[in-house]
Every structure is written in structure tokens, then in C-alpha cells.
Length: 257
Image (cartoon, rainbow, N blue to C red; front, top):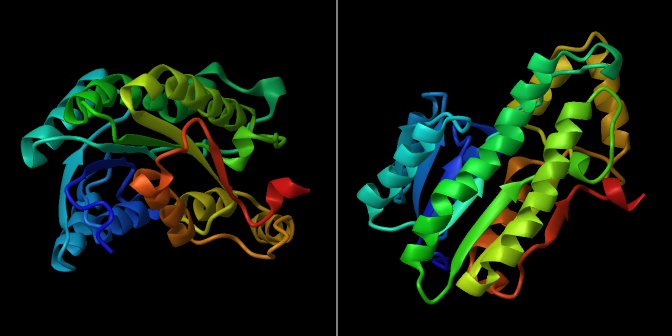
């Protein structure tokens, strides 16, 4: 397929997991992709896309940094001439924190990546997407979570950050609808990614918790990155031209209960 032919996409947190799968999927659909991450492993992902016949470049990028965002957006335009699609994927789990002794430093670290990083992405990429699409056609996809819709004990900061992404997305969608820029959020269930696996590995009861979490999904398993990338690719395309401000839930039925 080439439903994104001629489009330029930027994917944050693209060195592994959902970001890497998304970058590969958008490239297969014909987009030129700028992958960004703090992890240089993103260079290997970009190289694998090029080896498969796609167009991709990797740049180092800290999503909590104003200057890094400005530079990343300029790189997209310098490398490919325009910017049409932004996938705000970069995020951190942040570990388990009880509210009674939750440190402010840990709270701010989680919020700075998961929520501030999305705001900065909108702020810096939005004007470039508008300039590249004067008659409309831009698309922004923000990665929230099922924990941006329901709560979980021990994850207050993560839930707050992802809940913030949900409503930030809706506000942006309303502001930018007259510009023809669609803004939507994707809400994965538990997905088999390094972030989820590392979070479970840090727990003494990690194996038991994995079984419990899997059983909480009516489909009976964790999702895989491709399933989220497919939803993102749809939202990035003109097939989703009447969808904005929406919450696309991809969770194996977790939140249907």
C-alpha cells in the first residue's frame, strides 16, 4: 500500500516498541519518516526501514526539551521538505509509586515526558504541519493509554499524565479543526513491549502480575506492537479524514468491562 505516499511523518520514542513498529508501518505505507529518540538504537531501526526500501532518518531528541523539539521539527523539514504527520509516542512507565510517599521528583519526571512532551510536540510541530498543509490534511496522533481512561493503584502519575493527554488531544482537535489538522489519541491496553516487560521485571511478583494482567484482557493476551501501529497508520491516513478528537481504544476488551 502507498496510502501515505508523499507524506512526511515524525515518530517520537521510535527506538523500540510501539514507536519502532509505527515508524516501520508508516514507511511501508509510503511515508518518509523521521524517527527520534534519546536512544541511539533508533539508528538501527531507521537503517532497517531503508534496507526494506523505505525512507527514514534518525535524530537524537529529548521530548522534554524545547530546543530539542525545535531542532527535530527543523530536521524533518530540512530532510524531507515538509511535515504532515506527528506521532507523539515517547513515554515512560515510571515504576510503582504509592501516593502516601510519592516523591515530587518522580511525579514531575513522569509528567514531563508523558504530558509535557506531548504539549511541546503540538506546540512545535503544529505550525509546521499547518504550513505544509494549507488546505488541510495534517494528522497528529497522541499515545495515551487505557490508564488515561481508567485508574490503577500505584500508577497515579502515569494515569494523570495519560488522562492529561486524552483531554489535551480533544482541546487541540477543536482548535485545529478549522486548519484541517486532525488530532486523535490512541489508547493501548498492555502491549508486549520493552517498557511493559521492564516494568514487570522490576516487581518481585512480576510473573504473577503478568498472568493477572493478561487475564484482565477478555481476548486473553497482551497486544503486540503491530496492532497499535496499524491503528496509528489508519489515523494518519486520509481514510480517517472525518475522525478528530477521538479516542481509539486498542485494548483487547480491557475497558469494556
